[in-house]
Image (cartoon, rainbow over all chains, first blue to last red; front, side, top):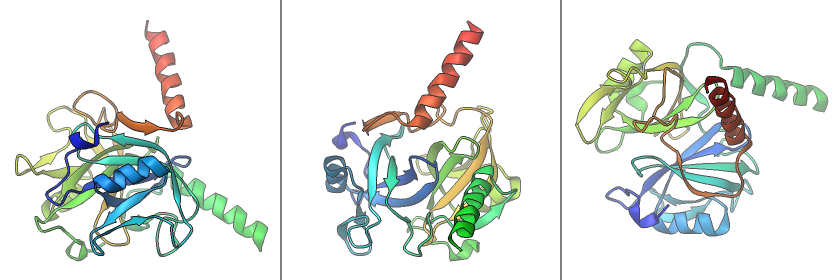
Length: 128
Length: 128
């Protein structure tokens, strides 16, 4: 992958999907610029560009919930990235594992979701 | 989920991640507007807005590789969507299962990736 060949938008940004490498769960979507991509590859931790604060941020630098990058892929149009990571904690600022925790609609509960719920239930029973 | 509460960008679009519901593989990222979200929920098939052609498109309408939507989630900022689908065929126009088939870097081959390779190899040997 050549960073200069990526199709950045007019603000110099590209969307980056973050996925848990182990569970396959999609954790969040954030934006990267050239510098944050370079820092991500260099440090093997996720760096993004905050559109509201207009600055780079290293995910987990304050919360401790860092994301160790195992793999970075680019799509066929070179206008979006996929980062497969090992997360040290929840991706969402609400404490949820994933930022995608609000359902728009659901035909049926996914097997993936049921497995996670069973694991949580077992952990909960062990702990309490 | 209230469509009117979603944080669309200045062009009235929101990025939508498409994931295979069964394998967990991230297939593509495309953009939706209000109308394509409504049509997706109504038809349970993915509809996107093409930024280049400036029109709605129903994924698979010509190729047959439709994506049946099992679940739609919205993230905590309400500025991106996750669609978990049952794909009828490859997501990518190149014939690859996923559009994210180009590696930027890889620390080690993911277990997920190895499993898919083994399955492909078995299918290939059976067929040839």
